[in-house]
Image (cartoon, rainbow, N blue to C red):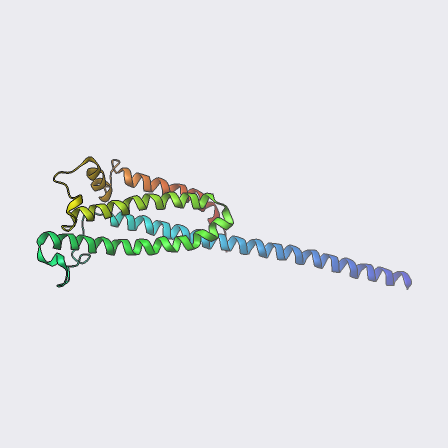
Length: 205
């Protein structure tokens, strides 16, 4: 009877140890699944918003601006008094409408980018900084184009088109051809981001 009691206690200890090991394994598996789920959802959001940003950039550079995008200057505006002023204001209002959703999408990416950098390191932020820098080049060129178009900014208006203006005009207009250097630059930025994010899309629910 004494030996049976010892054997019984040993079995209880072994069972407890095995149960503890199983619980630890289960907890680690659950943690790994949660990390995989977080990485998957983060990757999906980042790529989805990156592709949306790409499409918004293409729309921003579209040479055609519809009447629905443009607005006429209000009656109290100084631009209401001339056709040149009206043309400027219509272009200004159209670009403003195109830039607003682009900025909102960029801000969504920035929110997720903080978490992505914490999980995957600084390289992901570096790649997005390169993309944002390319976009900023375009925004600056739009600003310069509108300044030259503004009839009240006579100091920066030119009688002829300079080489820099030609470059700006080419960057402003999307062209589905191999000669579109700006589009190639954007595509390269996004491809580098894809290469970093796609491995984290392997999580399966």
